[in-house]
Amino acid sequence: MRRTHGKNCEFYPELNITAQLSKRKTGEPDQIFGIIDLAVIDDNGQIHYYDYKTSPKEFGEFSSAKKQGFRYQLAMYGKILKKYGLDYRKSDIRILPI
Image 1: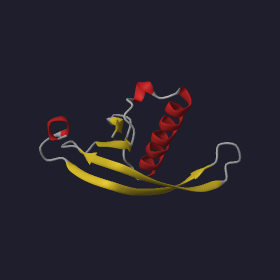
Image 2: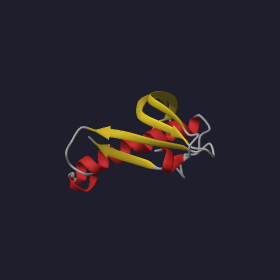
Image 3: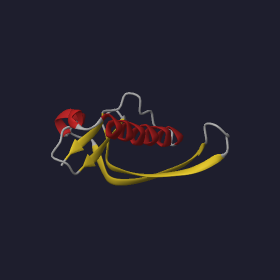
């Protein structure tokens, strides 16, 4: 990780995040919670986040429905991080099978 994100990067395991987001159809506020398995802030202050999945499969081996669910989960994390003022668009966002 330090080779990828810099020798002074900071690690935040099991980072609890929450934000109030508007529902797409109604516009009503909805409180969203998440736990990022591992967040890393690189030497440039950019956040990267990783989600662990307990499976021997690689991401490409999952069904399309399961992949879509994972993508949705990570996208919601990105929306919450945006509320914290963190730009996730240049992030290294990965699902790591364990």
